[in-house]
Amino acid sequence: MSEKFEVKDLNMKPGMSLKIKGKIHNDVDRFLINLGQGKETLNLHFNPRFDESTIVCNTSEGGRWGQEQRENHMCFSPGSEVKITITFQDKDFKVTLPDGHQLTFPNRLGHNQLHYLSMGGLQISSFKLE
Image 1 (cartoon, helix red, strand yellow):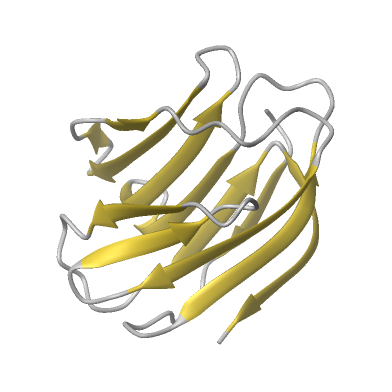
Image 2 (cartoon, rainbow, N blue to C red; image 1 turned 90 degrees about the horizontal axis):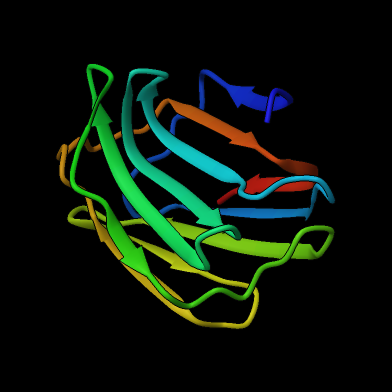
């Protein structure tokens, strides 16, 4: 998953949503969406893993991973088109999957502004912050 999309001046605040449209690469066993302060401090690491049939969410602070939250709702497959919405709230993130299912992940690090976005394993057709 060497190809990565990265934004370093995102300015996402509570109440805002990030809408992502794209296509999962054909040759991957997982893809990722990261939101946070920078590469080493991630408030949300969203990581569907096809090889494990699970979606992993986690945080990273100073490069140290927290405890994984695993969801067994796999509605993704390599090569498929996806539309994902991530809503940032004070205390948590709401991730709406392509089939309408919603995951909730706590804002463990407590930041009230997100500056960093990275995505890998996806060909992005559009993303919108509103």
